[in-house]
Image 1 (cartoon, one colour):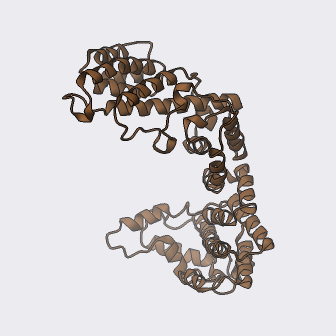
Image 2 (image 1 turned 180 degrees about the vertical axis):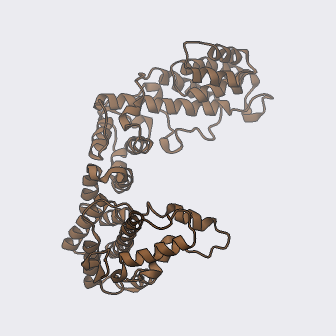
Image 3 (image 1 turned 90 degrees about the vertical axis):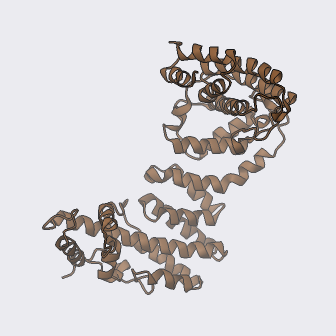
Amino acid sequence: MDTYLLPAAMRELPPPWHDLTYRRSQALEALAPTEERREQARQVLRACLPDRRQSVHDWDEELRDFYDDRDDHTLDEADAWLTRTMPTTSQVTRERVVQVVGAWADLGIPTVPEPPTEQWVDKVAAEWAASVRQSLAYDAFAFIERATTAGLPNDAEAEDAALLAAAFVRVGVAVEAAVRVLVSLGRPRGEQALMELVHDDEVRDFRPYVRSRLLGLRRWVYDVRAQEVTRDEEPLLPEGLQGLPHSWQNDFGWGATAPDSHSLAQARSVLEACLTVERVPDDAQMCGGAPADCSAVAEVVRALMPYPRLITRERMNDAWRECQALGFEFRGIDADCFAKVWCKRIADRVTAAVFRWLADLPRGGGAAGGKEPAVLSATTLWAADLAERCVRCGSAVQEAIWFLHRTDDAPVSREALARLAFDPSLPATTRKAAQEWSP
C-alpha cells in the first residue's frame, strides 16, 4: 500500500493544479481569472497550507552543487528528477521517493548514504512534500495577484486572500508570493495584514522582507508629510545645517558644486555646526545589531525628513512612532534618544560629504575651478583644523583623514595626521588609518 506524502485535499486537486510539471504554470497563465477560478486558487492554498512551519530545500543544496559540478551534465537537479517520477500530486508517495534515492545511491552521489538509511529517505520525502506545497502555493498566489492587480476580487475575496497570505508567511511557505498578494491588495487589508506580520514572532527571519514591502506600501504617507511646511515646528539641527540644500538622495553629496567663496564659506559653516551636534552612544542598540533593520529605520527617517531643514522634533516623533508601528525593537531608546541618535547620524553623514567634496577640489596652478592657490591654501588651513577635530570626536573619521592625506602637501595637514597617528587616547583603528595615510 502506497504511503502518501500529501493530504487528500492536495491529491484530489483538479487540473491543472494537480500537475507538478512545468505545464501547470503554462496552463494557469492561459486561464482567465474568473470568479470560479479565483475561488479554486484559494481552495488550492487552503489545501496546501501546512499546520506547522516548514523547511524547504534544506536537503538538496549539496546534491544541486554535485550536479552542477559534473562535466557531462547528464543529471537534472533533484526537483526535476523527483517530478519525473511523481508528475501529479496523487503520485507523491514515500515509495517513489525510495526509488529516486535508490537511483542516486546507484550513481554514487556522495551525499547519499549507501545504502540509503530510513532517516535519510524520510528527510528527502518530507522536504519533497514541502517543496510541492511551496510550488503550488506560489502559482496560486501568482494567479490571485494577477486578478487583484486587475481589480477583480470583491471585498470577501480580498479578505480571504489576505488571511491566507498572512497564514503562509507565518509558516514560511511561498513567502514572497504571499507578500506580493498583500501588497497588491493595498490599503486597508493588505497594509493591515503586513502591519500585523511585522509584530508576529512566528514571522522570524522573514520580518525584514515583510517590512521592506510594507515600507514601499506606506511610502506615499511619508512623502505627504515631507511636503508639509515646518511652521511652528522645533528644529533639531543647528542653524548652520538648516539651510543646507543637499538631501539624503546622494547621501548629502555636493556633487558638482563649484568651489567659490559662497560654497567654501558654507562648507566651513556646516562643519562647525556639525561639531556642535550632541554626541551620543553608538546607535547599534537601536537595531538589535541587524544591518537590514538599521537601513529600514534610516529609510523612514530619510523619507519623512529628506532635507536638514525638515529635521524637527515633531517629525522625529513621527518617525519614532512609525518605527514602532513597523515592529522595530528598540532597546532602552525613547523618542528623545531616538532623535538625538539620528541628529548625530545625519550630522556625521553631512560631515563625510563635505570632506569628500573638499578632498576632491582641484589644487595647484590656479586655473582649475577658477581658484587661486592662495584661496585653496587658506581653505586647507581651516579645513585641516576641523578635520582633526572631527576625527577626535569620532565623526566621519575615514573621510576626514582622507582629506588630510589629500592635502598633505600643506604642513598643517601633515602635522594633524602625525598627531592623530600617535595619540594613545584615540582608538587603535583611528591611529592605524592616520598612520596609513601619513606621508
